[in-house]
Image (cartoon, rainbow, N blue to C red; front, side):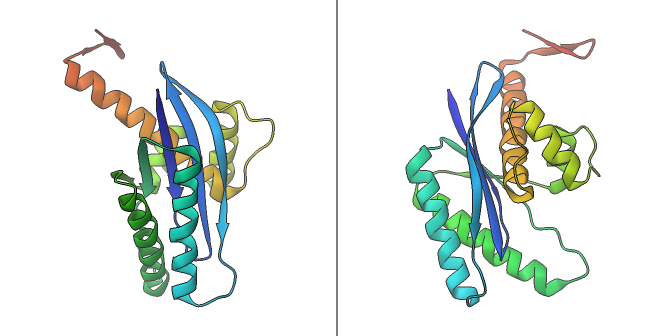
Length: 173
């Protein structure tokens, strides 16, 4: 059994999602948001660091996935996002866990089947895949999607390491 923590870093809101991956199935454990408010950047980074450490302490993940930085037109936003990622990654490293990074397009393709899916589509698919009674917030859904993507990627790697073959689109052992 594998417990996976997905992290959607943000300088104002950082989402987290925790799933259990067992026998090719994802099971929801927890999700939420670490909200920083309008405090200084240093205080926001400290809040992210402490919040991720608390999630790790509570749910004891064995693997962690995080979203890569997307550099759009606003360099300042990308830098702040990089700082937020750094605080989250440091919190994970303090727990002696390693982090796998995934692009937003990779996560969307893995969960929705379409790399340019919108936030609503991600929320709906995460809710359906994890059989949730209500749709999670965007940040929590993104974090859960990262955890699901990580589970799928790790499952694929295990099949490759075993030397399994792909026959007619199916993995054969």
